[in-house]
Amino acid sequence: MRTPVTIIGAGLGGLTLARVLQIHGIPVTVYEAESDATSRAQGGMLDIHEDNGQAALRDAGLLDAFRSLVVEGRETMRLVDRDGSVLHETADDGTGGRPEIQRGALRQALLDSLRAGTVRWGRKADGARALGDGRHEVTFADGGTVETSVLVGADGAWSRIRPLLSGAQPAYVGTSFVETYLHDADTRHTTCAQTVGGGSMIAPSPGKEIFAHRESGDTLHAYIALSRPLAWFDAIDFGDPASAATRIVAEFEGWAPELTALISDSDTAPVLRPHFALPPEHRWSRVPGVTLLGDAAHLAAPNGEGANLALLDGAELGKALASHGDGTEAALAAYEQALFARSAEAVTYDGAEVHGIDSEKNTAQHMLEMLTQ
Ligand SMILES: Cc1cc2nc3c(=O)[nH]c(=O)nc-3n(C[C@H](O)[C@H](O)[C@H](O)COP(=O)(O)OP(=O)(O)OC[C@H]3O[C@@H](n4cnc5c(N)ncnc54)[C@H](O)[C@@H]3O)c2cc1C
Image (cartoon, protein in one colour):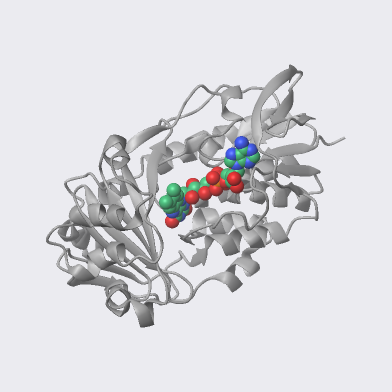
């Protein structure tokens, strides 16, 4: 008899795992803290890579669904100097291998692929304890409990399942994003729209960076990156959007107004997104009946890989559980061995030199050399 799988967290990783398990006829239930699929804006565009995110969607039988949701043209990438001049542009000719999709659309496609009732909404896990023989009991904020023989923590950065395996805690990496949105940009924010162009735009500088993306329609979504301690951000009143925007803009003195307008002209209140990470080589010893995937296993500062790795983890774990029959422990061991190797590789990959915002090399000139060499 195959053991039912209990997944905590209906993010991209947990849902991919659920989907792959259902394809292989393995019973699964996903418990999700949010009250329903629309209770939280899913934010942002994700570029889904051929070798991990797309490979996972193929295993989930969702590659065609994914392709139908790709937002055309958004792979265009523009490098801009702080004075607003465009130094380089890579056009989207459809061969980039990293098509862009709205995160919410991808999550919905995964949800739609699951049997009705697979996801139990409004079930926030508070913690879990071992019952012996690889079984675990999960306790929810509503007081309910479930027992399971295969427990998967897919509950993101602040996982309530991770303590069963590891004492590691995410630590602040020293950089945060401040997130803004400009809607109807082609008519209401024309200068910003022209500066960002048809896809993404990056204006880098050591310790600070403005990154923006044209989402579906003509919404501009900007991430303003600043390498500052958390205490520095604590002193900003984000409850007062205008003064918070003014304070952030002040960090970009001398930058082109069409770049700083991505902050000052935001249609939404600026939202602080501090970056936390687990230790780069985070791993654990095998504990019967439980494992982790995605950010719960290898949270890193945003580097364009996190969602892709979560998708891949979900697919790989699903395939491991399906191919090992009743041998759950062998499946989990094989999954973790590959997981540890690929997550260590992803966080130490050389892109850190290009994308590390606090690096002295985080300049438009250096990035130009990297792009044109
Ligand atoms: C600002 C920002 C930009 C990013 N941009 C990119 C990008 O461009 N490309 C990319 O590949 N990655 C990007 N990432 C990283 C990416 O978002 C994550 O790596 C990815 O979402 C991890 O997926 P996951 O399924 O592991 O976790 P999550 O997406 O965090 O999903 C976890 C789920 O578990 C639920 N949950 C949490 N706690 C509990 C609980 N106690 N009980 C029940 N449910 C719970 C949550 O509500 C959520 O639905 C970005 C991250 C940030 C912060």
